[in-house]
Image (tube, rainbow over all chains, first blue to last red):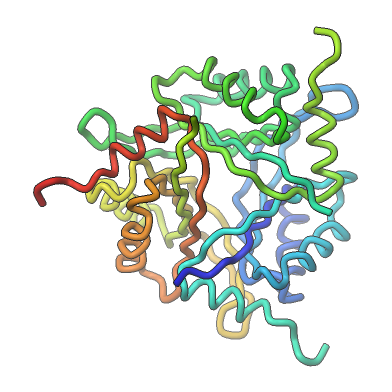
Length: 110
Length: 110
Length: 110
């Protein structure tokens, strides 16, 4: 029986910022795994012009229970004025889904 | 309150074709942002054999309202006989979702 | 009319393992296309510590009908104790969706 888990995608300005955010989310047990997809090029509308930036894309894997808290965590720490934070639910294979849920348990004593 | 937005994934034969399509979709206000994920390798069935190609993957971020029009736009301009166009709805953080909706408003005078 | 198809994401330890799994899934007609996104960095909880690994990310494109069988195939051949296997349904443009369905037909004589 597959297990619902949540993917959250965000883009950061550089590798150092991305790795620091990934590490902080893991230490707070707000994600079980964060994949750094590496450098991407983004093209977008910004204040009336079409702009382009090199960015680094992260994909967080978290539980349904911790998803909202992870989003607030990323929003609070993200360096952009309007960060890209995109969330969708997927089905994980049973062992992986159970692992995501176990690793994102709220710590008992903090 | 998160905002529904749409991700559309397509693969193009090379960076020049990908960047031209991204730019055209942005200028037509059919996407707020297009991420060029860079070079990928695709392996696939084609006319009886397993083939492999180097390609460039794009991810368009658009509004629910403009999604169908973006799809027709990509289908009409894509150089492949059977282009990969995959669409799914996600939840954007409020500021990003509002930005996607605002940037993909149909222009008043065109 | 768009056609439902399934994306399945998995990460493998290296390019050789990833390409072999992609090829095997294609030969078994359990996927129409497999995209190798290339090298990614994963950061994750494992047995009490935060670990990081270089990995290779694959995205399988398959039909709704063959999705469960593809998942069992990947689980059986994956080298990890707890492989990441994430599945979600998307909407494909009509021609691409029909192609995915046609290429993942179970062979008549095997």
